Image (cartoon, rainbow, N blue to C red; front, side, top):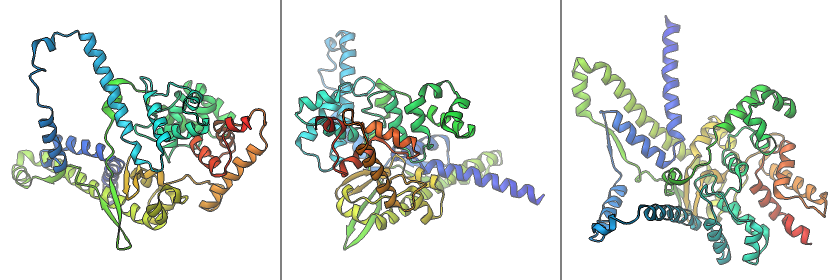
Length: 444
């Protein structure tokens, strides 16, 4: 009997834990939607719009009052095909504006950088893939291929994830690169054997890569859950303006952390309705379930805030120079390092930083950009970066000078050695080593 009760308690705790983890991984916009959904489902919850949002909506109503022109009969009798084209152009313009608005987030861009970025954004096709050759862009702006490639790498860090990809493989690789918890073989499977992945060739992949069938299954399942290519209205609906989840500012030599909650709706429990349902025997069952769900939501939001605050508190200690000087002073850091300090699983930290942004005095950054992947076979965070750089330098020193290795080829070679790294990181480390791009090395 005692064991049965313990099992029931454990089940309830597991359900509650899953709810908390779900809320933890929500970005601000996802949490906002989730709160409204729960408010509609649960009569015990009072959900009120954030004051900021209410004010904004009132302003927008005034700004877009219907004009007499819009009510004119001739306006409605215009050719529908024309309006369809007009709508499509407006959607593309809206998306381009969304991307352009993200440019000021990144510091250190000169006028030519901004012109190239705007050109790349204007060269996206209906899938929001890049529809222009980088060499043509380099020629047009009288710069190097590596310069344009570096700006494309920057564009590929913008929201939504995958924008600026040049093909399906790169689109999938960008998603993997943004996920700290991606299986270690995911990038390699996509680079070398996407066809085998699509046909679910588990035995063949297991034999080729000398890994267990279970690991192959997990990796294939992960790849198949990556976002498919989306177009048109569906991608526009997914756009949300970047609102920092947390702000860090210096006050009298100390870092002050402020959680940005005023953009989210407020949530409370309707006490009068609780009393009515509690006193009515016909609603006892409903009352208990609704109250349990309401409390779980409130606790989940509180736990999300607490975890986020603790992560930022540790970051201000470890990444002190970053908060003062920006990305140029970022220190190598793994999710695992924070997890150990907080006494939680690495996946909890991954969920907590997913889709969230931090505001500093020198710009707004994705929280995930403050972390770098560590190497399991190298001890020490700094050693891992130095080790990768030494490998890149060695590969380039031994390359065929008539056919220099591209950043993508270097990435693939490192992946084959078990070093999981993105092309963007390879490009960054190569530049830090003062090594020219493959295009410029060939010119030399």
